[in-house]
Length: 420
RNA sequence: GGAAGGGUGGCAGAGUGGUCGAAUGCGCUGGUCUUGAAAACCAGAGUGCCCGAAAGGGUACCGGGGGUUCGAAUCCCCCCCCUUCCGCCA
Image (cartoon, rainbow, N blue to C red; front, side):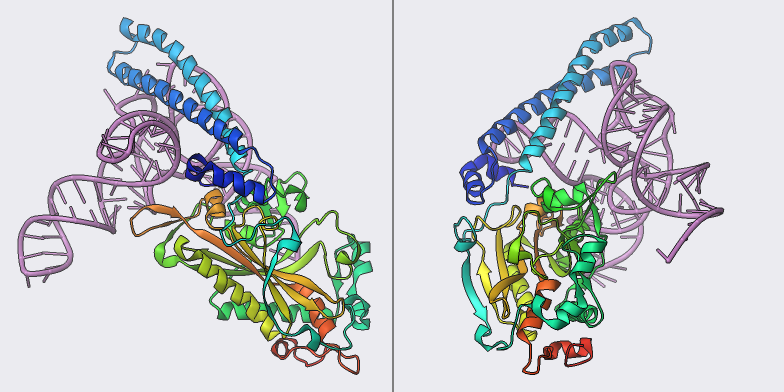
């Protein structure tokens, strides 16, 4: 939710943000609606005030007395007027709220202007793509992959994009999850296992609704949505909560399956594990004081990058441009891992600061030193998405003899040096 | 899924149609007293929105939504949640 003060006093900032982010919403119409709403609220309040004053008078009159009956007669007209105004107030209020929900968050000044992915800036890299295995092939062409990841089986049981991981591959996924969770715990994140279905209020608070409705799977007749990321239930756990200053920053980690419709994808983009409809992801979520939120974003990103160091996966760091960052985002980094077999970069993490945008929608506040309530800032990062990380590990570690040697960091979790 | 009971301010807990934003107690904040603390006493204190430079004023909020009424925390309807019992179940 946009800060009303900004909308009212600096509408040009909002117009600019909408344009830069490639969203369509009529800011000026919303401002006009805001003024209309205030007028109606004021007249409703005024009428209610008169009604309440009369009620107090009537409380002092003997019931059934002529004055009392006369007063009732007088009050009937006012009562009708109050109802009419309240109805209007409700209608305009709902419309106002719906419209406000269509305004995206304002990008941070450090976010580059841009239309699409070509305008994202590569601002860092680690590792050397040239040094990955000379035997690397696309993961979907590896014999071990074909044997232990059953894409056709998923197609039969559910549909395309719902892979089975079998035997050593299932064990490797589990090893990765455990590795990610242990690393997060060591970095101070508290583990949470959340519900995988959320209601509309939760999806609205984090910004999936109404903007990205088509990207979530909906459960008919229940009003529930399958979560597209753990961010949704985890952030919403503290909906309507008030933190004490000492509780912040609060750090949580959750591993969940994520469900995404991803309509319109095709070709090599979706081959193998490149893009699937259900995948596991370990997600880091932070609730922080507003002042330090951009520093918190850097440390959050480092928490994700550390995993890639330990997995010995070359990656690059992207600063996403205004046209590419999401609806509720103020600033976003993507981490892309080098896929030695496909010779391309695969996004495995997205690290974002939502500033107070989600906190306003979700009403997540803290009591400041001034004793007043303020909105927290929320941030999150993938650490990490499993399928693409797995793909890169498989591709980049093919040995001379064709076997796949796992990174040392995984040995304690997988139990063996080589896959299978 | 069935039955019964319940959801009121930070907590506990009154309030069953009118001056109730709501008694009382605990907790909290400030003050008096005290060398200090405790106790006692006094005072204060919710959140959103609207008007206002501010002081302040107004309004809404008693789980959520609708209804009855001149007037609803209080009466009626629907929904949600909690507790207990029964059924079913990993």
